[in-house]
Length: 392
Image (cartoon, rainbow, N blue to C red; front, side, top):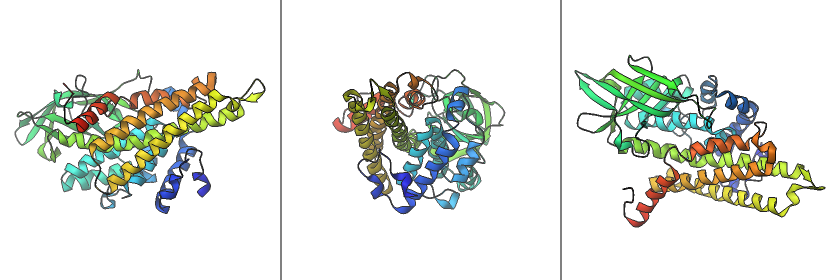
């Protein structure tokens, strides 16, 4: 199986740093993506479709919430191995990785970190198997980069709660069986709730007009006086730090996943440049093409090193959210630039869905925006470096 790891993108031989289990998991997911995703993803993307069979298929593969404990039905792999899983999923499509990121980092993680034991036992095994799908309701039409400005309210009603508000740009929204919804109580404190899809007053409306992440379900959630019992509340999920800690988990996976998208674009462009002839020679023999390829490989290698070290820090319990900001900021912007460069090398073919660079580039425009924009992560890092807050 080692021949699967011999790729031109492993220029610094990072494969040697992985243990056998990590390589086995990575190669297994790579084969799945090559066999089950790559041949079909262009058609799914064009139709704006996230196939309904994929949650169960990903669950059977063991990739959903894979870095959570086996006690709750997850795979219990290391964070480096989990990162490699998301890297391979995003080689296929950012929408595929986004589904797994939301399911694992934004639904399973908050239930694991902030939920009751009953909530964990009820939801985590089902979510890990892909028998149930979850979504994460934080962003609102007027509160994206500033989640503390949310308008969704949760008011005490007897022994339960009444939740009213709107959430926007919610991955998995219209296919979710349960939504992790964040709302402010009467004291202005943010609390997390598990809202099941058939709860009266809850509705999800899929957004159909996207020119990016088309093979991903993105929805608006509307909660109109939704009544839930107190046992739907995440007992440990209160204060803004709770949802932000979930975003840190998701951003970690994005930092790895973006490298996968970049690698897919680079490998496609490298192969095309070697085969495409112009003026009697392969275009790979031209200085301009070689310069682009070298710049692409350099960015990918830097991104791999960042992601790998980030994973080591996370496994050691020493990762800070600012470490994640740096990796997400760099790796996604790098991947976007690599995808654009690959599209240029492919020429006119690069705008077709028979090739992958244009689809990846379009997807990465969204990835560059969600889970904290490039500029927001710049300000997070600037505050960490200087001790001065430039957000206002």
